[in-house]
Amino acid sequence: MSQLVLDYSWARPDPASLRSAGAIGVARYLTRDTTGKAIDGPELHALQAAGLPVALVFEDAADRASLGGSAGHADAVFINYAALQLSWPSDRPIYASVDFDITGHASDAQSYLAAFAATSIYPIGIYGGYDTLQLLPTAQSAHYRWQTRAWSNGQTADTICLYQAGPGPITGTDANNALLPDWGQHPAPTITTLAAPGDTHMIVYVIPDQSTGAQPGDGVLAVSGATPVRAVTATEWHYCLVPAGATYRSIDRQAWLQLKATIHP
Image (tube, rainbow, N blue to C red; front, top):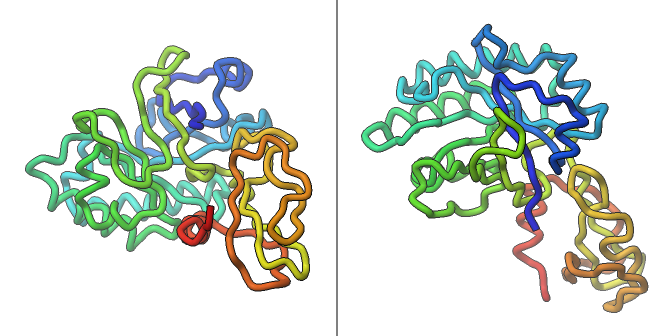
C-alpha cells in the first residue's frame, strides 16, 4: 500500500497541515536558488520534530542535466557542502533531478548523472521520467529511484520508491506515492529481520513506525520453527530460509531487496 509524501519548492505548509493532509513525509530542495526554494536547518528540524521524515533533491534549472558531466560534477560539489551544513547523514541519499524530457539529450543526461554520482559523498537518488529511469545506466543502477508522471506516457519504471502523481492536497505541493518503506528519507526507517535461536526460518518485516506507516502490532512478533507464534494483521510477512540460530539484525535497502529475492512464500 502506497503512502503520501509531499514535495514542494516555494510553498511552506506548516507541519501540522502536512500531517492533516495525510503526508507521512516530505521531499525538499537543495539548490543555488536564493528566492526561497531551498530547505534550511530550522525547516528540516521542524519537520522532523513533527514526525515528518525528509528526503533531499538537488535542482537548479529543470534541464540542468542537459549540460552534461561538468555540470554534474559542479552540482555534486555544491550538494556535498550544502548537505554537510544540514548535518545530513552520510548513508542517506540525495536525489539528482532530471526534470525534463530527455529525448535528444540522453547522452548528456547520463554524463551528468555519472559525474554527479562519482563526485557526491552521498548515495545518489535519481528523479525523472520513465526514460530517464529505465534507459540511463546510472539511473538503472541507483537504489533510490523517484519517477514523475510527466514524460512517462503512462509507463512505470522498475523498482521505484516514489511516484510523483500530480498536484498535492495543499497548494504549491506535489503528491508522491511512497512505494517502498525506504524512499531516501531522514530519519531512515528501520528494516529488520528476526529469528529465534535454533529456528530454521526467519520472518522479514518492517518495524512499525511513522515513517513506514505500519501500525503497532503489524507483522510477526515471534516465530517458532515455521509457525508464527503471534501474527497481527499478518499481510506483510514472509518466510525466508536462513541458517539455524540467525539473530536479530538491521539491513539497508539494498540488502532488503536482495533478501526479498530469496523469500519463500
